[in-house]
Length: 227
Image (tube, rainbow, N blue to C red):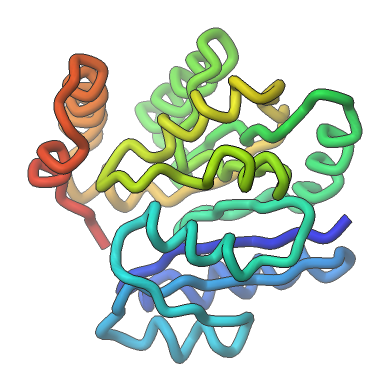
């Protein structure tokens, strides 16, 4: 099974080298390609990425960048990984087992933060419970999906925000999604910058607005991406 790891980036020099070094180690025993999709970085992001994998240039926008990476990918399984998220050592073995089950089209990992403070552990636990009970995953949980299933639904919707929630709805209409018992580790930097409570409440606020019909473009104007 060949894996295509697709990573959208924009001005990620602060974390990218460490993340790609760890990813190279995890990929070492598997048939993997790493596609780093740059949305117009103005720092050393592209130079760093070229040392570890193929760099693709794309118009800015997470959904647009991930679709651009998928269009160039050659693997049977696509993994969409944020630049500040780290896969577990047994990620590919776990995905292979999950995708060997008939009807499974994709899924995600459980979430933990690279911060041991109790508040962050509680937020991660709440996220994982929501994923188990309601089947709602976020992009930080490293989505994986069969290439043919991704192509069948037309990829990520062309949205400024909330593309991660929307694609899960579309994939679920085609087959089963699974939450793996393994953990992807994501950086707490965004929560630390804004303040954990404020950050979590703000994301709940945006998702609530989205469920009530506010457009992703309007939500994007409220959203500040922290690096």
